[in-house]
Image (cartoon, rainbow, N blue to C red; front, side, top):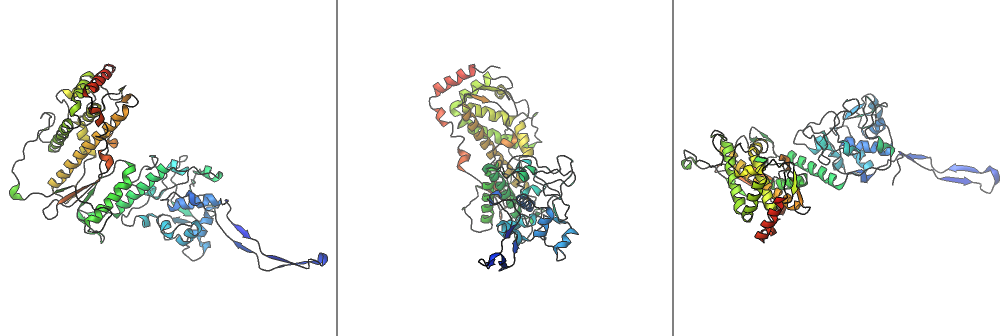
Amino acid sequence: MLSRSKSCVSIPSLIIEGMNRGPGARIRLLKPAAFQTTWCWRQDWISGGESMYGLLALFQILNVVQTNRIASEFVIPTQGTKRTLAKEPTVDLHSSERIHLDRVAQVTGLAVEQIARAFLSCAFPRSGWQGAPYLRWCPECLKSGHHALGFQIPIVHRCPGHGSQLIQRCPRCRVELPYKLHGASTAQPLFCCPTCKLDLVQELRTSTARPPLGKVVIAALHADASLLELCDSLPTRTGGVLTGAESMGYRELVLSMPSSVSRTMEFADFARNVMLSLAGRPSKLNLKPSLSYAEPQATFVTKSKPSLSCGWPKHIIPESDRQLIEAAAIYRRVARYLRRGVVREHRSCVQCACRRIWWPVLGSRTVALCPIAVAFIRWRMHWEGTGVPSLLLAEARSPPLGLVTWLAALAPVGSASWSRAMGEWLVKHVLARDLITSFDALLWRATESVKPGFMVWNRLAISEIPRTGWVCAGRGTASNPGRLYVMVSPADQAGRGGASHLIQGRRAHLRWHTDCLRRVDH
C-alpha cells in the first residue's frame, strides 16, 4: 500500500575519492540531486461513476494537500502560467474545458475516456442536462468518499443505492457548497463548508481505513447510471416530432419505468435492443413486438361503442367517466381469468376466509392461511380499495380506489401525435399486465408466509407493485402501426406456479384452512 506522502526524493549517486588517503578524502557528486514528484492513489477506492469533484476529493484525501496544489497540478490556466490561478481561483467542475484530462489520467491510472465521463457535458452529451451549481451528496455514500455524477442532475433526488435523500446544504450553517475547484491558497478542502468550515469527510482524512460501499450499493449506482445513459440516448422530441440527426428512423417512442432497482440495468439493455431493432440495426436479441395496433379505417368504425359491464353501479361510477369504466371492465375480466384458473380449486377457501374476517384487517397479524386464497383476497382489497374482506362478498359501495390511483399515478401517457384510440389501447394492455403481475407478487408473499406460520396484512403501496418493462413505438396508423415490446423474464411467471402443489389433496387442504380460520380472532 502506498503511504499518504505527496512527494519522494531520488537520492543522487555519490563517489568517495581517496578512501585510503586519510582524513582528506573528497566527496564528488556524479549527477545533481533530482526531485521527482509522485502522488499516492488507491485504485480500489474507485467504485465507478464518480464525478470529477469526487475524484479530486479522493486525491486530496490520499495525498493530504491543499486545494490550491490540486488546482496547480490539474487545472489549465487561461493565461498560460500556473501563478494566474490565484487571480482566477474558481473552476467549474461541470465542464472539462479547464481540466487537464491527460494529467489526471497519468496520476490516477484511469483511462482518459473514464476521466472525461466524470463531467456532465461528456457523460450526457445529448440530454442537455445542466448540473446544479452547488454540491449535492448522499450522506451514506460520503462515508466512503464516493460522489456519483448523477447526484448533480436536478431530476435525481435520492441515492439509488441507499435510498437516502440527497443533501444540498451544509448540515450546520445551511449554506450551499459550490461545485467548483478553488485555486486560492486560502481555499477550504473539498467536501468542506466554506462558511462554517465543517468537514464532511473528516473521518476519512484522519483514518487510513475506508468503509466499503458494498456490492449491492455499487450495483444500484451502476444501474441508475445505466438508466440515465439510456435517457440521454433517446431521440429528442418537440411536439411529437423527432429532431436531431441521430433519430435513427424512430417515430414515436414511449417507455415504462422499472419498479425495482435490480431490474433497472436489465430494462435499459432491453430498451436499447428495441431501439436498435426499430432502426434496423443488429442487436443482441431478435426482438419482435408482443402486440400491435392499427386504428381501423373509417368504413369499419361503428357509430356507437358497445356497453361495458364493469360491475359497479352507475351511481358509483358515472357513465361520463369512460376511462374508469373501461379500467373496471378490464379488472373484472382479469379477476374472472384468475378465478377460473389459479383460484378455481380454492374458491371454498376464499369464501370461508371472507365470511370469517369481517373487521378491518389491514395492519393486523394472523396465522398463515391458504396462500392462494389470501393472495386473491388481498389482490381484490388492493384494487377495489377496501380494508374488510367480508365486503368483497357484498355489492360495491365505493369506487375502486386502487384503479383510480393507478390511472392517476401509473397509467402511461401517450405521445402528442398519437390518436386517442392508440393511447387507450396502450393503457388497457399495460393495466392488464400490472393486474396480473401484482397478483403474482401477492401470491409469492402469501406462499412465503406459510413457512413461519403467520402473516401480516399490510397495505400494498403503489411503489411495491411489480411492473413489467415495455417499450411502445409507432403511431397506430395503417402505415405505421403501434408496436408494444414487453420485457419478459422467467421470474415474471414464477409467482403463479409457486403454490400449485397446494391444489393436491383439496379436502385435507380445506380442512387445514378452516382450522386456521378458527384461530383468527379480532
